[in-house]
Length: 184
Image 1: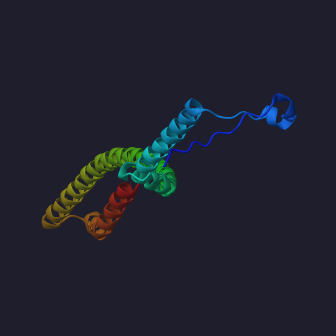
Image 2: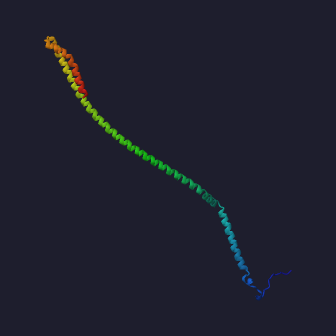
């Protein structure tokens, strides 16, 4: 059998319509170029699909999906930290105010204690003076009593007996004077 070739017979130029003129028949080089471009695109598509489905890409996608959750959590923690900071700042201000008040009270108490100490020393001085006066009054009373006893032994006149009658009144008078001096 003889090889058969399928050839198209050339069509005369006058018979070609306008639509036929626009379409041009592709030759082997153009078809081969188109196939190469399509094959290269297909290879690129395969490479892209392999890379898109790789662990790194899926991990990145997962990380990108988890990122808003982590961001929300971090924002929540930041807001809580800010609120804690505000509360702590308020507590520090309150403590500082309390410290100032306590320091002022302490200074006032120190001044009051110093005044009381000075007053106590003054009162002790006055007390010593009054004790001295009382001692002197008691000595005077004792001296008068001894004089009375001495005069009663000598047997004095009626003036002496009237002095004896006044002598018991003198002791309470001197004690009263000493008490008044102590209170003054």
